[in-house]
Amino acid sequence: MVTRLTTQDASFYFLEASSTPMHVGSLAIFRKPRNGLSYEELLSLVEERLSLVPRYRQKVREVALGLSRPVWVDDQDFDIEYHVRRSALPKPGSDAQLHDLVARLTSRPLDNTRPLWEMYLVEGLSNNRFAIFTKSHSSLVDGETALEIGQVILDPAKTRRPMAEELWMPSPAPSESTLIAGALAEMVARPGEGLAALRMTLGDMASALGETVRAVGKVAAVVRTATQVAPASPLNATISRNRRFAVVKTELGDYRKIRAQYGCEVNDVILAVVSGAMRYWLLSRGEPVAESTTVRAMVPMSVYATDPEADDEASRRDEWADPRSMVSSFLIDLPVGEPNAVVRLSHVAHAMEAHAKQSQRVTAETLVRLSGFAPATLHAMSARVASSFSQRMFNLMITNAPGPQLPLYVGGARMLEMYPVSPLLKNQTLSIGLTSYDGNVYYGLNADRDAMADVDVVAALLYESLEELLDASR
Image 1 (tube, rainbow, N blue to C red):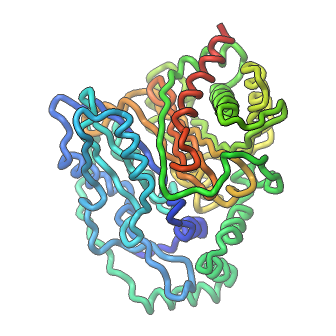
Image 2 (spheres, helix red, strand yellow):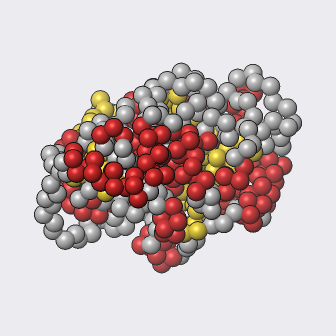
Image 3 (spheres, helix red, strand yellow):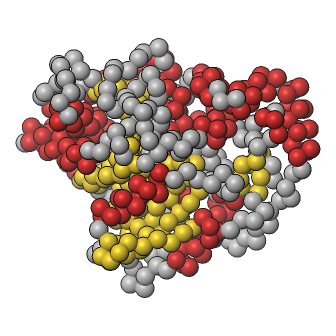
């Protein structure tokens, strides 16, 4: 089956560069079940679930002379063992070694001659654990025909969900002449799309992608602030192709305590914690920090239709069964110049309240209908929305996707921790992704290896910033 890439899918495909690979990653850590989980068992599970994400068996094929956007075609030589790989740490593998491995894997672009995804089973982790790291290209995960592969292999119980048996056969590959004829017919019917395709081919990504974003201005409130220039910051610099990765694990209950004390939202507390960490990081570098200093963040934020903080199990299970979310994207100036943690939280809460009143929030399904490119996960959405504004509109991308507050499993193995790995955009030295899951909030910090050699300092300061707010609320 041949399907043309949407305008934004094509933009992300062409936007790929050696220093800015455009894939979204996810690191999940599991407790090894009594009978273990072998590579062959994971391979079987992934192959079984590919019927839920048929695009993961398709690859991108470009049209000659850039006459039209590329198309998705079935991979005639699809090799599941190429995509699901096995890796091992020297026993007993430490968390630091795992994070170094994730940084190296994140640094590598995906092979564009094959379906644009990879999965790694990482064995040898200490304390009877293993990890699964996945990465999927931003052009692949569109939220309609492709969810992120790590999502579909998870189950809400130890027992695997039964799946209908499927015999997959690739559709015949189209000939070059067929693709050219289709492109020419489309250019006649819709000449504007032909011009956009040529812009992509010639590398004019900002123009082509910018037009796409403006065309769906209802989706992202950020479009209304497109004329604002972000303040100068060491967070914006030329980046290399190499990465560092750090994580932070905190308890959701701590954020709830602060929320209850100050009458705000958990998301407000999270952004206030990031604000404090960014303040102290700037000071640790000897950067000038005045009372008016801010760090502008792009915050694509998701709120489940059901309450992700609900305490009753029935509500949480309903949420897992129907993971549609409310989505809003906006810019916020984090008050890093404010020395008082409680005042920082107040500034953030007021800014968030103003955005909530002004922003139009729609369900993920509606986003797909409106724009044709909305992805399944907020972390994928953040990269897609943010990339066209990265050089001038904001200093830092923060993605926040609330997850289910009940245990999830892969092949009977309980997931203990889950960390998003958001991509770095051009001239962005750090991206922060966070997800709440089963009573905890997990931060994944993806950073440039050279420009952010001190990313572990940022991780430590996130803990300190949270503790500062907790102390103030006692």
